[in-house]
Amino acid sequence: MTSTLPPNDVVRVGVHAGQQHTDLDAYVRLWQRVEALGYDWVSLFDHFLPIQSDPTGPCFEGPTLLAYLAAKTSRIRTGLLVTGNTYRHPAVLANVAATLDHVTGGRLEFGIGAGWFELEHAQYGIDFHTLGTRLAMFREAAVVVRKLLHEETTSFQGRYYTLTDARCEPKPLQQPFPLWVGGAGERKTLRVVAESADGWNMLLPSEEEYRRKLDALAGHCADVGRDPTEIRKSLIFWVVLGDTEAGRGAARGARRRAALRPGRAGRAWVRALSAEQCVEWLLPYLRLGVRDFLVMARPPRTRRRSS
Image (tube, rainbow, N blue to C red; front, top):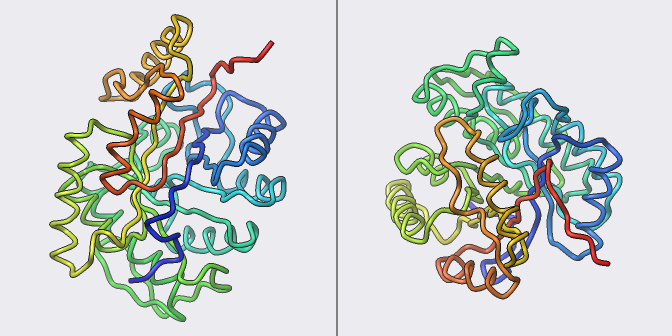
C-alpha cells in the first residue's frame, strides 16, 4: 500500500476547527486566516449538532461546507476529520470523497471513523448500534471506501455492506488517494488503521499511552504484513497560548466543555502554555513519529487580540 501523503521527514502543522456556534462568514474568515498565517492544513468535523458544548446551537454540515471553503482558499490542505460511518453508506461516502478531491483541486485530507455521538443518532432516528457493531461496520466500510476510490469496479460481500460491480467515477485527483482513520481503540480501531489507512489521527494522549498504542499498531501491522512507519501519524491537541492566569482560566473552561462529551473526563490535554512550552510538550511525540500536529479551535472560544 503506497500513499500520496508527504514523506515522514516532513512535519506539518494545522488547525482542527469545528464548525459550531458560528456563522458562515466568521467561519470562512477563520479558514482564510489560518491559510494566511502559513499553516499546512485546516480541517473541520462531521457532526450535525455542536459537540462538547451546548447541543442546541448552530452547526454546519461538514462535506457541503468543505466544498464552499475550498473555493474560498487556494493553497492550504483541506481536511475532514473524521466522517462518522453511521451517517452514510460507505459507497455514498466514497463518492463524496472523490468529488471533494476534485472540488479542492487535490487538496483533500479525508478521514473516516466509527461514529460516537449518540444524541445525533437519537434526534435523527439513525441506528446507533452497540460499540462492537459500529466498529465491525466501520471495518467493512473502510475496505469499501478504499476499493471504490482506487479500483475500476468493486464487489464486496460483508455482513453489513454488499456491492456488486460498483463504480465510483471520476476517481479522486490524488492517486493513490490518502485515507485517514480516526480513533484510538487498540484492539479494533487500530486494526482498521493497519488494514486500510494511510494516516492515523487521534486526540493527543499521554506519552505513555501513546507508546502503548504505537505498540498495538505495530502488532496489527505485523499481522497484515505492513510496515507501521508507512502510516502517517497525526495528533489533535488543545492549547491556550499564554502561560498566564487568563490563559489558565481559558484552559479550565475548555476542559469543562470537553467533559461534556459522554464518558469523558475533563481533558488533561487542554493546557495553557507559552509557545516555547508548547514545543517542548510536543517534542516527545515528534520523536515517536508524529508528523502532523493539529491545534484544536472549536467555538465557543476566545481569541486574544493584540492592542
